Amino acid sequence: MRRNRLGASDLWVSEVGFGCMSIGEDEGHAIRLLHAAFDTGINFFDTADLYGRGRNEELVGKAFRDRRSQVILATKVGNRWEPGQPGWRWDPSKAYIHQAVRASLRRLGTDYIDLYQLHGGTIDDPIDETIEAFEELQQQGLIRYYGISSIRPNVIREYVRRSRIVSVMMQYSILDRRPEEAVLELLTERGISVIGRGPVAQGMLSANAADKVPADGFLGYSRDDILRINEQLAALTGPERSLAQLAIRYPLAHPAVATVVPGASSLAQLEENARAAASPPLTPAELAQIRAWTKPVVYEQHR
Image 1 (cartoon, rainbow, N blue to C red):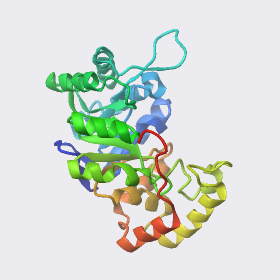
Image 2: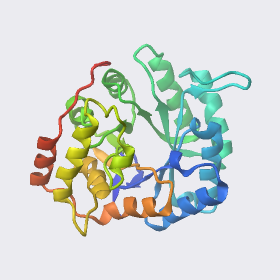
Image 3: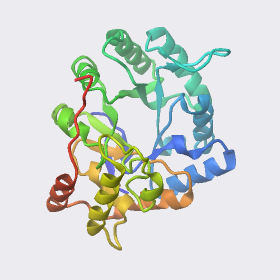
Image 4: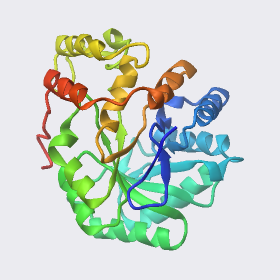
């Protein structure tokens, strides 16, 4: 599988990664999925302390305990839960980041994290303090590189301006083209990579679309709009490229995108996702056609 450099780092990530939130909490099933992903050539695995209140990190760590040097582990920080308290609260403080990274290291069963990401953020955060925390963790050798996971253009621009992030994770798909309008060119210019999440749009860009598209639609598209788009996209599929694989190839066509991280809850889903790496890249004519069938969509807030 092709590997791309993540920003200015020395991390070379498989162009199709694995979004680990989907693996569930059954240990045997989860570890089988993760090992199968590794066997297909996937080396980039993205988790978060938020997923399963840490259980997801534990499963990922257990799966790769004997293969640690062969995989690139990414996790996230910023959403804080405390025993006896309902829900989560946002905490991007330096003190909490230093505390949380040690808990994630313990759950992952490792002494370093390849990519540590801020899991959200707002323009009102103490951004310089957050950056200082990541820089200190990097100096201490607890993390190799850091990035952010955000769809907020104003936040992304501040981290681009103030920090040494190597990546931005954001939702990006045929049905969510907002990054094209807001930040992809900036990130390309600055040598910061995009990690694309949601390329199959929660299954709405797949053979199972009829079961996945909500009655009230998605991001300004009606249900009928999405089903019509799927019918149009079918003209660009064939024996070498399914609809889901076409959807995965779309964000990868942009030079800013180093990897996409579709999830998979079954071996069949995983295998289809991984085969997207061997499917034909989209041609300029195909990209133009897809953009004609869809709409850019814009960020209405956080500009």
